[in-house]
Amino acid sequence: MKNTALLILLLTISLSTGYAETGDNSITDNDYIYALQDKYREVAQTVLPTVVEINVIEIVRQQIPGQTFSPRDFFGYSWPFVIPDQGNSGENPPEEREFRKQGLGSGVIIRREGKKYFVITNNHVVGNADEISVRLYDGRNFEAKVVGTDNRTDLALVSFESPEVIPVLNTADSEKLMVGDIVFAVGNPLGFESTVTQGIISALGREAQAGSRIADFTEYIQTDASINPGNSGGALVNLKGELVGINTWIASRTGGSDGIGFAIPVNKVRKVTDDFISKGKVEYGWLGVTIGPPPEEGMDLREEAGAFIGNVFLDSPADKNGLKPGDLIIQADGKVIENSNQLQKVIGTLDPGKQVGLKIIRQGNEQNIIVSLSERKSEEEISQEHGLWPGIAVIELNNEIRSRMELDRRIKGVIITHVSEGSSAYSAGLKQGDIITDINGERIRSLKDFYNKLNKKELDSIEYSIYRQGREDLTATVRK
Image (cartoon, rainbow, N blue to C red; front, side):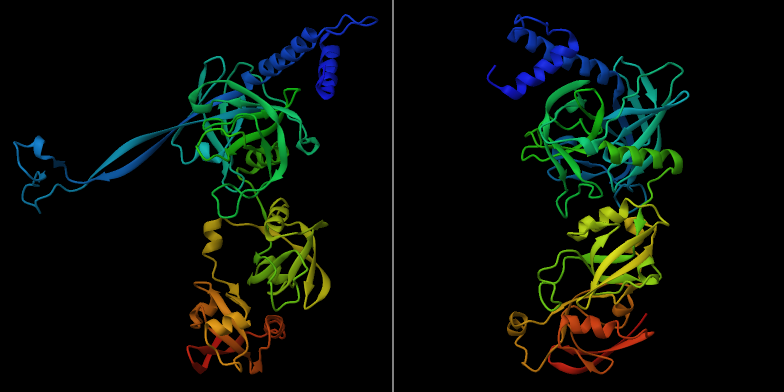
């Protein structure tokens, strides 16, 4: 055969399935093809009984306005006619009705404890479901309950009970995956039950695009095995029929399969499953900082990569252990940090209470800091936190900004690009576009100078001198 790699693969399969003969040259191309076919059949027979169809119903309550009839509905009137409410305003009061919103996805039976079976799926499959049922490959249906959900990884775990023995899918080590590995996607695409598609691993370590709705607390396996709506929560398996990932999303211009599908690695799935069963939720480590890319100007960090701290939450692990606004984190838990997303993933995978070593750059000097992590709150709770210090985002006042704002050359400092609502800076009246020229009476010459003076002393309050729309006499006192 012309393809040497395929020849070696088929030979290996034929040896394991008994097709190869020893001592002669009687092996034919058909033998290899049928050996490969048998291997594919073996994978399908192993996996299909462990992949379920998940049906969910969410009860949605909506208000329906007073009923309006079209001209054809009411004796030929030429305008919409509303039945008047007797003795009221002339319109029926809104009526609340319940709608049963149905959804469908896939799941994988990943664990068994006695009569209880656990099915891993996507969080976006379960959603806010009021009713959940799982349908097995053999057609049996079971009512299911939510064990835990997590939108940061887009994983959810549901359980059902059965006195009969049901197969559970074995798991592989996703750290050993390589680009080019043969994989199979198993699920219920577009409602077609128990569909198996085949492809390879196209890439590893893919990240969700910033600003998308895709969960960004994990790195994804990319595959060209055909994945469509309904595959979500289904299995991605290897040639041994072992689970390597949970199919989650696709990149597509049409909404259908373009051969670019993504799965959550099974090692992440295994940890999340353990957390759901033992704690009912997934716990994440938390530093307590807002982070972004290193500033392009004013900090002498142009050649550096890492996660730049813009603000610190007061009384957070970062605050208690000495991290400060203006620090650049370049290493965490022994891993080099290239950007803020990577830091978030590294810290998020660590357990609350763990002490983690950080390497930072502060005012041009490297330092090592040990931080004891706390548990990360929900995104909603974090957004409501008002203890941000300094509560503002600032950038270097460069010549381009100076020209655009028609500023006098003698005006120096940093310009505020954002003020966190509810922070002490917000309460003090600071606004986007303000230029901070002084801190506690000391002139600000650059962004680096700003953070140096901001962190110079442990003070309960700081007085800023502000330039705003031609006025140079403004001040703002910000208290921690």
